[in-house]
Length: 155
Image (cartoon, rainbow, N blue to C red):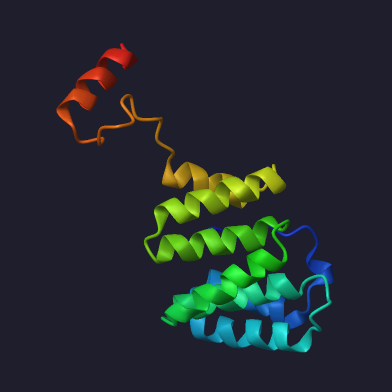
């Protein structure tokens, strides 16, 4: 999975550990990024506005290090603060990492409803691709009849 750079509204509000963690994540130094993100989210109180963002990045970097249970950290961060496009993007990337394409698309669509212009979510949606509806919803996409009707509809 190639890395899609996060979109920040204002990095000046973020702590130094978080900024360092994002730089390390972009350089694919996941273990060091995890340590920086953990320091960032442990140093912030739960009521701090960027706490969920810090926690989301911590969960995502843990997942990249092979700790599969970290998906729950990403999910809880998105549940606590669903209005931040970066948090939704991290959860979608985590779901993609775990081969949950449908879950990732649901999260991307929800994130774009709440954060319309988020470039990272738009890139993820374009990269995953969105299929059109099946021509015959009761049949699978592999059914020959479904193929024939689909070809006719496209002509």
